[in-house]
Amino acid sequence: MSMQRRALLGGALALPFVARAQAIPFTRVRPGDPGWPSQAEWDEFGNAVDGRLIRVKPTLDVCRTTPEGAACREVFRELKNPYFIGDDPSLTQTMGWYQGWQSSPPEYVVMAKRAKDVAAAVNFAREKKLRLVVRGGGHSYLGTSNAAHSLMIFTRAMDGAVLHEAFVPQNCSSPARPAVTVGAGAIWMHTYNAVTTGAGRYVQGGGCGTVGVAGLLQGGGFGSYSKQYGIAAASLLEAEVVTADGAVRIANACTNPDLFWALKGGGGGTFGVVTRVTLATHELPKFFGGVSVVIQAASDKAFRDLVERFFVFYRERLFNPHWGEIANIRPRRRLDIQMAFQGLTQEEATALWQPFLDELKASRDYTLEAPARIYAVPGQRRWDPGFIRTHAPSAIHQDDRPGASADNIFWSANVPETGHYIQAFASRWLPQSLLADAARGKLVDGLIEAARRSSVEVHFQKGLAGGSPEAIAASRDTSVNPAVLDAFALAIVASEGPPALPGFPGHEPNLREAAENAAKVRRAEDTIQALAGDSGSYVAESSYFQSEWQRDYWGGHYGRLLTLKQQIDPDTLFFVRHGVGSEGWSDDGFTRS
Image 1 (cartoon, one colour):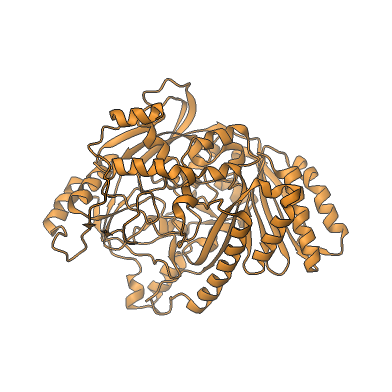
Image 2 (cartoon, one colour):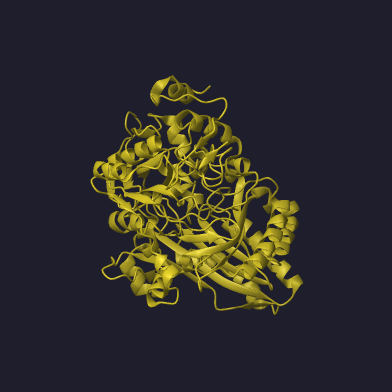
């Protein structure tokens, strides 16, 4: 038993809970049940949170009554604006999943502004046996940030950011570090703007700018530069969290260390409600940049040669801390490369890519859809809204609501997933052994075979093999599946449709198309799993129907996570489907057998 383990079990967490050898049958209450709180009890609770409790009026109700009306059309137009969705507790960034789940508003929501509000909501939900939902940014492919008949804790307004020149976690004697403290409702676009544009530092976060900071950390999330800085959770220095007993606690390497470790990748909404986090900041690279090139092959043989040539090039020149992002292997012999880099100049990146590009141009077997684009921008301007609007306006969209902040920008590349309806989704880590000469043919053939059915996205930043020793060491000290340390990339196959909801006339999903595309994704998934084996999947981007989710999401860490969950939340107040400790519960989180 480790020293940290003894400290927790010896009372550092000081929770009045004990692990149960066998779960006791339990049912949460719904509206109309005898145990559902009376209006007087809701009113009393609302007073306890200073009027921040609201009864939810679903925004989409207008589409039930007048589906062809102007108001409904406007709502569906704004479902492509992530800020509109993010501010509305009745909506979610993903509208649903074919044969899986659909977006459902809560009954009540606490618009939390402080940890005290969160603690009051936790206590009320526990005492009244309510289904509790935790939401910050609202990004969840798997539907964990919403539930019908629930009480939602919405941390959106807790979005402040405070920069520190020298931060030392509470009760620690470690050297002071530059850091930033942000509220649980902060999103990455605003956090990057505060840290990088405003202070000339770098904080490791996610690629999609409207994802919530706290959710990404707890989900073990990645950013474009993870091979240099590690996963986002690796930079976590301290968190404030409300646990199932309603206590507000500090978790860091010295205080409640097991809880701290669990928050670094053990899954959002599982071990408590995070109310603020403090992250180490890093020296800012002089330049960030990207490479964009789309290549069409003339024949199947030429396409195979192209994909193999690219992976040889990747292993020899890009398999290092400078590079991340995606190569898309698409049907009909198309390779779409969208890579990102840090710490290189445009000239250095161009020199590195030129031999590969020259070979393509010299061959009649390949056509470049457009001239390859290689660019770099000053590090401090990477997330500067004004700079991007001036120099790359097509790269972003703007929050178009009246009075919206000029800082409310979002990447054009993320528009398809805003308000989308998922038809199918699957992922698998690709072990670095597949890059070796002896295995490369297997890698290439497997990816091409999968891509005949559905495009395969190879996310190089979502895999730490080839990364800096510091990134790997810091990420090893998290609760994510250790398989990520040996993976050079994450392979994703997926299909999506526009915003849609079953039961909304004129706005229902195309079920025939969904069924066809889901079947293609499943066949591609089978091919990739045969290629990668039991390497695991990334919890935030995986299948709703993941069968071996404990092993795939957390690997050998699952046992330790489950033990902690049973200690601090034995009644699973914080329920997340396919989250730690969810065994034995119904999918909706209301019934434990």
